[in-house]
Amino acid sequence: MNILITDIENNLGKYLNSFLAAKNTIFGFTKETLYLPDKAKTLEIILSIKPDVVIHTSSIENLELCEEDESLAYTFNTIGSMNAAYPCSILDIPIVYLSTSYVYGGEKSTPYYETDDCYPVNVFGKTKLASEKLIRTLCKKYFIIRTSWVFGGADCFVKNILKNKTAEVFMCTKEVGNPTYIKDLSFSIEKIIHSDLFGIYNLANTGYVSKYDWVKYIFELTNINKEMIALPNNIINEGTCRPKFTAMNTTLLNNCFDIELPDWRSSLKEYVATLNE
View (cartoon, rainbow, N blue to C red):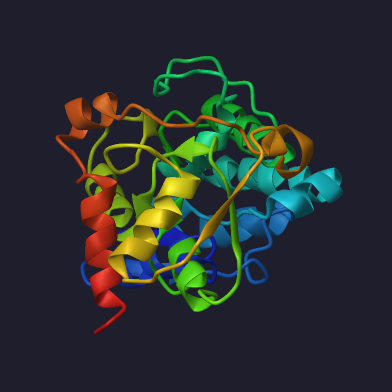
């Protein structure tokens, strides 16, 4: 299969490039070589390659940057996604769009289903939801993958926590989501692209946890005895612009693709073990 990946420099794109290369031909780009806000150039590049599928990983994911420069966030994340989707509609090929659990509003107390209403609370989530809507409007063939708290690969939250293990750790106890192992995510994407069950899917490891307890478990696995400082519960609303609860239900993924990912603790143990190799 000929696969075009819109950004192979970010963590997920880089991992997917390596993961999928064994059985497929990869056409990998960077944000610069495939500058998605340029509609004409994006159209020209994708039409010239004629891939079997486009995996759209390119995105501005820094939440603070998105809040500071809303125009940039919408230009790159939303208009860029529209420009990536348009040639896919012309070629009648699937687009895999990596979205986020942050499209959900965070006000539920039970895991979100794909059919739940979306009320994102920050600019990043709003740009990703707008992208989803444009892709669904333009394309008949799409896989919109809502994932969260991806760890693993060359650069990730877990690795950065361990790299800075001597620094004080401040974590909010009320920010809850699904840690997702990049290996499990990539395995799932590889299986999904060989199907025609198009739609929106929650894709994350089984189980959910607060970010505070996630970090605590990381330290337990690595035998680091470290005190953590819990931030006030209202810190999410005051400064970090992150939804409180974005845990996702993955029943639809399981039913459609027979994919049931391991519990996040199991996958985290596997990942941590690789850091010592």
